Length: 81
Image 1 (cartoon, rainbow, N blue to C red):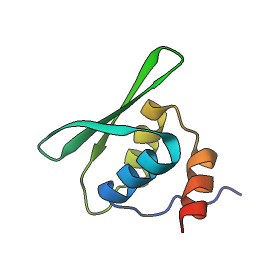
Image 2: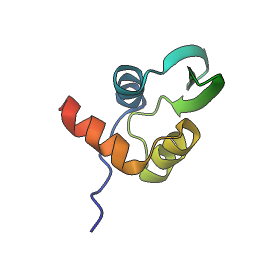
Image 3: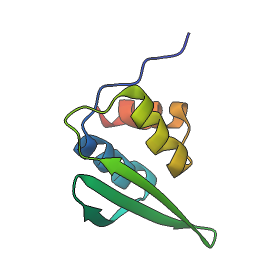
């Protein structure tokens, strides 16, 4: 059975993407933060809303844009705790 995604704030997700996956904050417009990183000549961009708690579907959308699997994120989150 799949492990449930943790309930995290936008700030917490940004911290994990920064520390564990090498993303950096590029800009912010309102309550949405754009993060990016360069891998093999490609620019990967994702957008994180600064909500107090991200819904699981929103978090999965952020991870999909970032090219990170659910399992990779859960492993990074568990190492961070």
